[in-house]
Image (cartoon, rainbow, N blue to C red; front, side, top):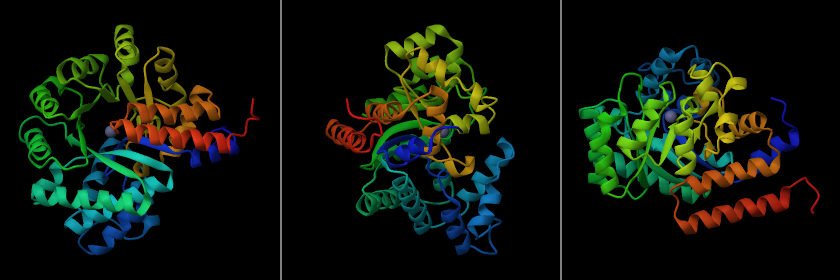
Length: 347
Ligand SMILES: [Zn+2]
């Protein structure tokens, strides 16, 4: 990373919106250690933040999935889930994230015995407390864990039957390869009919054909990752023309081997093609990153200065599902910050 200390500071203070971050994947070592301490002797997860950091040390995708499952296993009571969401909200606020759409996968919690009403009550209470304590607005993307059948049906049911106030969208994560996006067309049709937005993951490790499926069969308004779109000029044109935003998470793509290195990330080619993009962090502590670092990576890849990174923050606000009033307020906050903190001489 060769961006200047001034630009690093500018990014750290810049009011931002985060549109692609997972609730489990955002659990910091501090939060996980706090949860593990509640179950000492009944979990393999260490109760010391430094040891959790080593436990997170990412080896391969299979290791990542094991770590993820062990963190899910620490969320045994409503208080545990509340602690996680409130802690994640605090961590986002500390990075000057003013608005976040947190992708939350209800299914593993339902499997562990949470009742749908209880699950929604807890996350809603934590969401309100985050806003009261830190001023950061949270919204939910309920995420289908990539498996057709009951897991997908349960996710749709909890979304539509409970319809918590903070819910804005339906997502689709989990394994992509060999799982046609089209399996989930009925779920996304029902979500759209109920007024929810549609933001499936697609084209992260799978080819551009999966992105077309997400657009045509699921009505995707934004795409999680979508980086393989770069292989299909007609798709790039479609994304640009219809203003379908790709939620780009550069470090995550390297960690999952979706791209070989940051230097080879297709972000510059996507921007060059006129595709709307936002910069996001995905599973930040598990990938050794945070949103500020991802902005620095993007600044490096796209040769951006202060104006460019402020435009990234504005693009995330524009692509968000925040209402018109909320968008104007956050854009004004960004403008005020730029006016006060820009190191460039006026004029
Ligand atoms: Zn993701």
